[in-house]
Length: 82
Image (cartoon, rainbow, N blue to C red; front, side, top):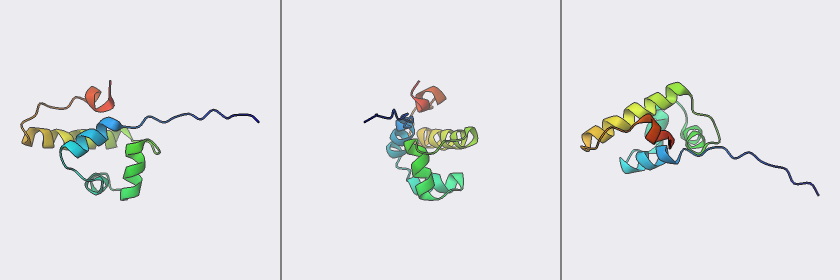
């Protein structure tokens, strides 16, 4: 029996981490991106790709929340786990 190699997609754990830290729901981000909640969930878990425009919207929303909380800005590198 041959074993197939499956490519693992990168899970955007940092997006999920910051979203939860600032108490933003998946439904809120889905609305922000103009997609259904399950579509957003697939993006967050790496099942579906996140476009550059979507990533910029998420980054901006998270930084607004960080600023309200008195936290330093979130860099794009931190958001992407770099």
